[in-house]
Image 1: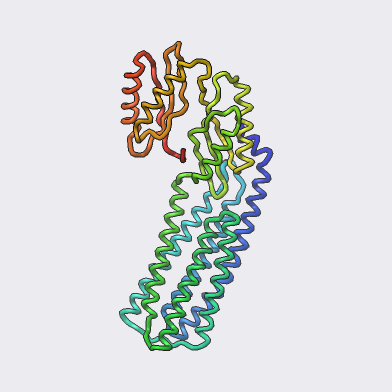
Image 2: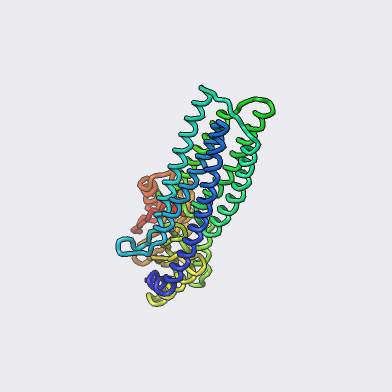
Length: 386
């Protein structure tokens, strides 16, 4: 319905926006690759000449960053492909798969670094630093700070989790390189070799970074709770329409960065015609898309009693009964037909109770209050902030 109209009018513009985003990711990643390869080469040379395990591991870390950037480019290219018959919602989730591979590479690099550092603690070797080595390490710290700031800023600009993670990782690498520089200075001044121990610390932080990246990516792939600010914004936009009395059951499905589809229920007066409701739905779909970029693929309708006071009194009794339970988060979609003795409503349940148990309690209580009524209760999941 609404989705087709939006895709026809705005789909091409959305694709152009995706292409621009893709170009930014690729360009930024290429800069990161060039910088990390250069740093890895210099650090590897310094590590070999000075016999420093910490510097060598720092070089490996830079090399893994370069490989990560390459995979980020591949993921960005795949995710930017146009939708096709087999993938009608696009290829955006390919970016999450590339992020998972990046996380695995970082994790592997950290574990390998830890193993090598422990070996050096057991079988220590004396490092031999030169002034040139220290200068190279110091320059590497500066380059990493500049690179990390730039990459992270670009990631925020285009909403790329991969770039934001790479930028943060680069800034953290600057801290790690600083620790390598500090250990070298300590050795030159006091003759105390902290090489292997610094290597262990670096590897632990690399492993931690890899685990955190993997957790975040797994959450994106499995599906996580929608951003509360975004759900509030969408519901507020819908409820700002004068014909809508409430917005409920908002579900946002993510198919890659900035590629979201959603469904929602709206509550409207029971006197509206199908034609009037159709106009409202189309109006809401266009409003939500223009303000948030999210396409409402489906809008369900709850009817609201507007023609008798008895219905309002029954609604209030039911509301008080249901909301007396801590696990009942919200009641909505309430409608009662007084003449036919029919009543229906939805209840949002917390994750603290099984739906079957909750429904058993609510059916029992409503039957006690209104024994002559046929009651239908639909359990809803706590999918977004109410």
